[in-house]
Amino acid sequence: MYRFTETRVLSSVKMMKTLLFFTICLIKGHMGDDADAVTGISGGSVIINCLYNPETTKEQRAKSFCKVSGSECTTMTEENNDLWIPEERFSLTDDNTVGLISVLIRNLTVNDSGTYRCKADSKSIQEKKLEVTEESCCGTSEEQSAYLGGTAVIRCRYPEKYNSSLMQLLKLQNGSLIACFTLGGAIDPRFSLNENKQEQVFTVTIVNVSRHDDGVYFCGARVTNNQRKIAYSPLFTEIQLHVTDQEQRDSSVLSDLHVIIITVCVCLVVVLAGGLSVLLLKRRCKKTQGSGSSDQRSTGDNDEEVSSVYYATITASGNTSLDTSAQETLRLNTVYDTAHLPTNPSDSDFYSLAEQPKI
Image: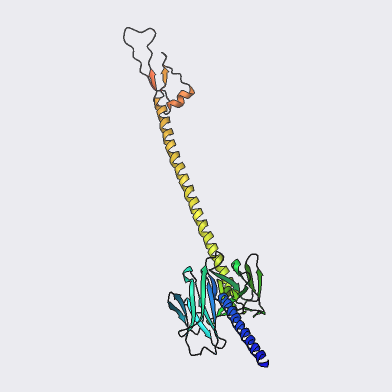
């Protein structure tokens, strides 16, 4: 009886172990599916994380990241000291103390979509499926300016599908992307973050800006899996923040004023020159028309004076009667007199010579 009971207990234990094993496998498989899905924004960047057990994966094994194409896997990048390499789109770093591989893919395109693997030597550690989509709100690069001791406001937009994710701001520093915020809040108390989920916008405000704040920032989200571990981080917008002091600000303002003053002066000179040219042209035209009309007028007067002829009647006594207007005309014109024969002419011809009146 005792042996029979012991046998039944052992059978029950085995069945429980078997059920537990299958349950764990199902849970792992479900979590693996969630972790494998990675989304990115065209024009933006993404950080993909691969987890492994540092005890089973030896430190000396070289880590790499490859893209699956059929039966082959083309290596995209290998382990580097820095996650950020300016001349490379793909870069990889390995933290073997916690068993974390981080891969950064910059300037994403739709062609980057596909299946990738994190590898240690030839052994596959984890597989990721990347999907790159087009989003009108994101995938851009911007530049902003802030003054030393002032306030900088960084405004970030993100797609609606990341509403449930934690927003974050990363800064490029010494070849790494350092998060400005943690689960407990901002690392630097000068930083504050406000989010508007309805408009899909979060704003980061930096007060009392210092020289150290100058640099490259990334607006992004932190997507976690069921184990509350970071699966990946999509980066939506890249911001270049320029910090200048008050003297540079004043000099830039003065230079802008100089440009404005010079532009206004040049415009005034052009306008004055144009007005003066028009005025001179009008005066020349009036002068030409006036000289032409005076010539015509003088010519017409002479014609009238020449054509006007005064005829005076000479009486027998030889007296000539002239009115005042006739005298004035005689001053400038030739007068023709008509001689009248006497009333009782003699047999001989009588000729009378007309003389011009004496003025």
